[in-house]
Length: 255
Ligand SMILES: CC(=O)[C@@H](O)[C@H](O)COP(=O)(O)O
Image 1: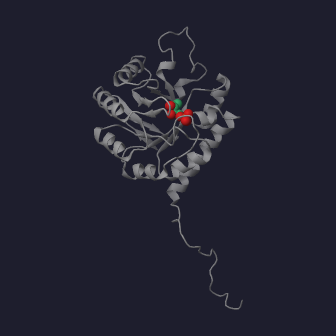
Image 2: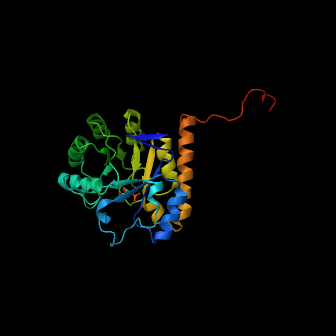
Image 3: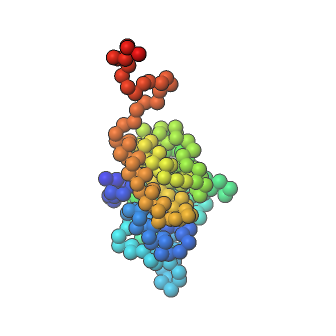
């Protein structure tokens, strides 16, 4: 069971809700993924005006924890304002702090992220910052009191998979709060690898929403995450330099 603040989840797949070709496919993919957590950009929602289009309109939101994110924010002030909008709309007190520091790579701004987390923690939010795979920042944020950390696999929407498995492993090993690998997952093997490295969950969007068959891909992601958790728990063999025969050599002297 995954626990973040007061929230508990059986599924370890968090799904982004953007970029689906239509609402029916979105709803079917969400169902197939088995997710319990749906993330969405507060800035893209019309949280107060029911007459304006709502990208989550086709989803039975009673079945899911909605996980607002601050995508689009570039400053601490914007981030806090977006979080307050989500809170006042009654969406959820758990917030993904996403502050882009570079428009080309969409990589997060570590300093603004740290400052925004400090403010949001003081205001009583359950705070989950999106960060690069920066081991030291992850530790500093944990010490600050955040409830989970969300290091990237690779830049958002690139589908490049886990760019720096070593850093991710260092983060996982040193972290006593949940680690949710977020962004850049391209295929089921990437999601499985994240879990084999010891991550607690994966957040992904583009790999499912832009797949040729998003519903099949959502199911594949679910299965790969389950396989990764099982593999991690089972304990993988050490990687060896030298070959080692699989069958015993004893008793083969007659050859
Ligand atoms: C939906 C969301 O929160 C994105 O910002 C997230 O980072 C997903 O990235 P991918 O689209 O690369 O999976």
